[in-house]
Length: 207
Image (cartoon, rainbow, N blue to C red; front, side, top):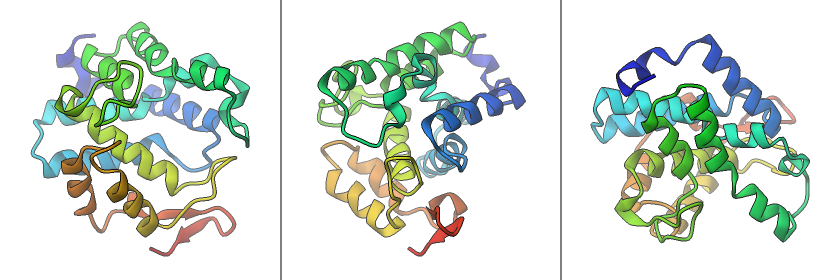
């Protein structure tokens, strides 16, 4: 499938795949779809072209497909990973890129999957890209994925409030996150995807 066909790939099969990835990672609530919504809202504020926004949404839906393919028990373990596990885990973006290619997803989607763990300061993985050498879509995914992970329930994660998660983004802007993307993200409001999830009540944590 070429890039011109990216608009056709958000279908029931992709949604089902995203749900499988969420379930494997231990998310009870839709995680990939939440990231896709926030990423698209950021992209809209930055005035990304429509095809780039579509590419970003597709990449958000499958960004952790590498974890599903690897199928490691430690991905949902309630403990600190061993060094060997950590190094193995860092292979998942590359494996995800390969799996996205096998499934016929566009090259632009494949690369966003590969680079969604790159850090603004070059301290990420797998390629240690930094600054604007990281595609904008991957920088947006890094921010939105982190925010959603912090504010949702997982086996080893107690969700924080949206205010606390936003403060984390501010503190790590210029280190892990593109400061400009963080500023744009913080300007978002009125979106259901911004609410933090409370597992015990099945509802929302107040901001």
